[in-house]
Each structure stands twice: as structure tokens, then as C-alpha cells.
Amino acid sequence: MEIFIGTEADCDELGAREIVKQIKSKPDSVLGLATGSTPEGIYRRLVEKHKNGEVSFARVKTFNLDEYVGIPESHVCSYHYFMDTNLFRHVDIDPNATHIPDGNAMDLNAECRKYEEMIAQSGGIDLQLLGIGPNGHIGFNEPETPFESLTHVVDLTDSTINANARFFESHEQVPRQAVTMGIKSIMQARRIILVAKGAPKAHVIMRAIKGPVTPKVPASVLQLHPNVLIILDHDAASGLTDLSK
Ligand code: PGA
Image 1 (cartoon, rainbow, N blue to C red):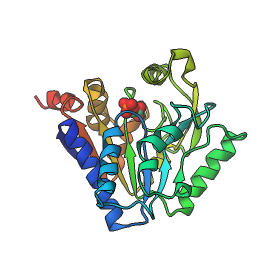
Image 2: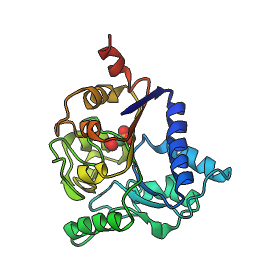
Image 3: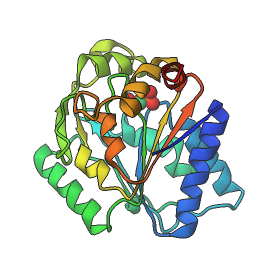
Image 4: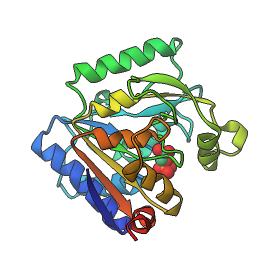
């Protein structure tokens, strides 16, 4: 596990550079993408790099980690909307090559199986970008999710509902369920980059990186992956520094 610690701007630049490097080495790369406030800066830099002619997404395929259940794709808090406004509409990606779970599918379990099949048919994910929840979740894999899990429907924990309420008009509007790639789906990616920013993430980062590998802290599973880069700003890394004192 490689760990980078820098300013927020350094983190965004490194995250974007790693994605550009991946696409340059394999123009038809399959990217696993994340939403949330953490990757916004990385996507901004990617858009800049695309506009500067540094990178083309023309042959790239993407699979997003997750989507809420039961809100329209056009809802400003949906992850479809997030990806469109933060990245997809600003670059030359083929919309048919972008995939996000359908949280409005009539049969959500069938949608989960279909999503796994599509990832497999694409040849698997080359580079998976991840954030981390304050409770250690990756995607919407909440604590105690089995490490063997594939894409599934999840009941969101109070911690996640509270953390995400800031994006909605009221706490009551936060969906209670989501479709998420599982821990195994994430671990099958050939390379994983986890990004965390801000002091509220310091404790969970310390547990995920230095603590025992346990489903109680889903991100701790990354210690078992052979090709992981952790990108932290100084605040998110502050627990690691304290530990070495
Ligand atoms: P955030 O969310 O980037 O908005 O902090 C990360 C996550 O919950 O995975």
C-alpha cells in the first residue's frame, strides 16, 4: 500500500494524473468511479486536462460504485446527475460507455446481477477510485458487509444518512437504500486509489490503514489488495502522524 500525503490541491492533481496515466497506458481503460465531495477536485482537474488536450476519454468505459434507490436520475442529489455535471458532459466520453446502477429498476436484485455481468464483460475494472465514509464504508458497503459481497441493495446506516443529509434539503429526503458494488467487486479492480480529505476522516483513515482488517471497517480490506494508492490531505492523515509519535 502506497500512501501520499499533501495539500488538497496536491491530492486532486495526483488523483487526476494517475487517471490520465492509466488512460494513456490503455486508451480503452475501464474506470471505476466514485461520487461525493472528495473526488470533485479530481474531476475538475480531469476536465481541465481534457480541455488542454492531455487526455481523451473516447475509448474509456466507466462503472460507478453506487446509486441511491428511488430518486429520479435527474434529481440533483442522484449520482447520475453528479457524474454528468462533474465529469461526463465536459469530456469526450461515449455516454453509452458510462454505467451507473439503476436505483429505479423494477427488480433491483436483477439489476445488481446485470451490473456485475457488465463489469465482467468489459474485462474488469483497471482503476477504481474510492472515497471513504466516516464509518469506514467504501461505496455504500457499510460496516459488517461481508468481504465476499458483490453488487447488492443496501439499507443505509444512520451514520451515512446523517453524513449525506448535507446534500439534501432535509434529513427526511435522504434515501434509505442504495445499490452498491460489493467489497469483492471493488477488490477485483486491478488498481485502487482511495482519497480522503479533512479532519473528520482522520480517525477512520487511521483504523483503515493501521488497524486490523475487519468488516467493522470496510476500507481496512484494502490492506489485502496488492496495488493500492491512498491519497490523503494533511488533515485526513493527522491520525497516522499521531500514531507514529
Ligand atoms: P465524501 O463521501 O466524499 O462526500 O466525504 C465519501 C463516502 O461517503 O464514500
